[in-house]
Structures are given as structure tokens and as C-alpha cells.
Image 1 (tube, rainbow, N blue to C red):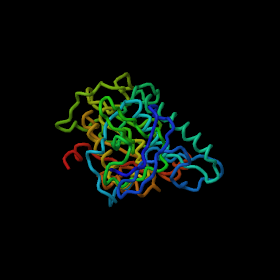
Image 2 (image 1 turned 90 degrees about the vertical axis):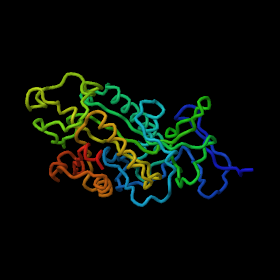
Image 3 (image 1 turned 30 degrees about the vertical axis):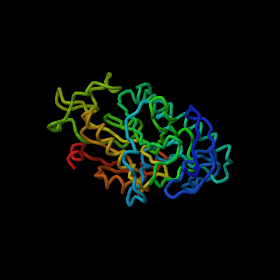
Image 4 (image 1 turned 180 degrees about the vertical axis):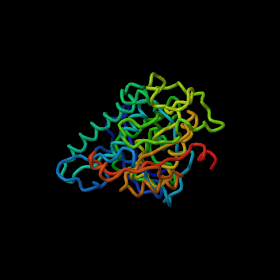
Length: 339
């Protein structure tokens, strides 16, 4: 008979409490421990005082070099989602990845703030993809999630060396016994934003320009669809009459994150690959992403994925906005498709 293992039990509500069974050490069979408690990451940046710090929402990509363990591709899924439970899982991943806390914050305070941020991120994702966010009324948004299928009893699949310690229950999607769907863990997420610029972002792309021809083979059948199909200022496209609107030609990645305990497993690359598939299906010609200048690891990750620096902010400009200096990296969608 199989020895007992640690299992994750989560109520049907994605945010419910959980309890765990008996622990039994097994090689490459480390169970997922979903418990409410202090986060398993170390505070970053030495934030002074009792201030919660949110890192740049668009620069938390991991470095995927030298994966420490083989992954069964059939256990990992990357997809565009509008499912409420999966969107909440994405919100949990962002709250865990983007927020850090001073060392003197209490467990209750951290847990309360994290739950508040999960709810806020959840509402924000839904509003953007449904076109209810006023700032994104001229932007088409897709949320992508990468998830790991667990066994029916909640155990990790064989050979997956992943430590889920400290994850929030909201990151777990309960299984569906009726349809035979296993429980899943949301390990990472990102948004693809189709538009001429990313809302509230001063650093914007310049390619393609209004006079640049549309690359051969570009599918423009999605133009005029989605949440960026409404009225817009023609001044944003100052090219020849009848030129393809810039809002359909560019896209920006944002909210890119993989949970710390699931990094260096190639999941970031899977998310980027899937984002370019979405962009290509929308007829996007150029993909952009912002990276903080001090986030060397993220910059290297994107450059390894084919992005190049198109522009950067000055220190003075960044200081005027009270935030770190940023790079804007770009990559033609067709160039990646040809690799």
C-alpha cells in the first residue's frame, strides 16, 4: 500500500481555509502545503518603517536559466482565462510576488493586507479584461495563467521538485470530480495589453510608426474587436489616411510574475511564448515590456527571450515620478514567430 502523504485540502471556495494530513517524506513527492500564515519570501529592498512596498508591476519576471528539475509538460498548462477562480489564482500570485513587508509586521497584519490585495487585484483583472476599467477603455487585455495539475488527492505529480510552502489557498483551483478535472495550482501570470501605449505609463513604444507598412501575412481580422474597439482620437495615428491604427499594432506585457518557489523551471518562458501567440492572433506587430533598471535579472531574462532595449528613462525623469528608472524593451512579433 502507498504510504500516507501530505495533501492539500481546500474548500470549494477558492479563498477558503485549508488543513493538511499526515506528513510522510518521499523522494520527489513533496506535497503542497497551503496554509494561511506569513509569506514564505524574505522582505526585499529593506523598506523602512511600517510601509508595504509594491514592486513595479511589470518587471517581476524570473530568470529561467538552469532549471533544477525536469517537468512533465502534460502537468503544466498555460492559457488565456476569464474564469473567476483562475483570475483569483492570478490575483493571489500577483499579491504574493509583488508585495513585500517590513520584518516587524505581525502575521495577522500581513495576512490581512495580502487578502485585501488579492481581492483588489482580482477586481482589477476582471475590470480590465471586461472593458470596465476606464483607464483601459482603449486597450484590449488578456490574462494568461500557468497552472500545475495536481493528483486527485492534492499531491504534487511525480518528479516535480517544487516547494509550495507558504502559498495562499486562493492560488489553488479545486478539482471537478464530475468532469474528472484535477485540482490545479496557479504558479504564474501575465497580461497582454493591445494598445498604442500602456495606460498611465509615460515610456511608450514608437514601432511600428504610422507610416510603416503592415508586415505581409499580418492577420488584421481582429481589428475593431475586443475592448479597444470603441471611439478613439485620430490624432494618435498621424499617418496616411486609411493607415492601420496604432492601437492594433502594438502590445505591452504587464503583471509578469512567477511565484518565487516555482522559478527557474521554465514557466516564465512558457508564459512569454503564449503571450506572443495571443499577440499574433490579434495582429499585433510589436511587443513591448517595461523593466526597472535595477532589476538586472528580469532584463537578462527578456533579452534571452529576444527583446532589445528600445528606450530608457533618465534618472531625473524617474525621480520626478518618485519611482525607479525604467527600460522599455521591444521585439517584433513576426521575428519571434520565425525562431
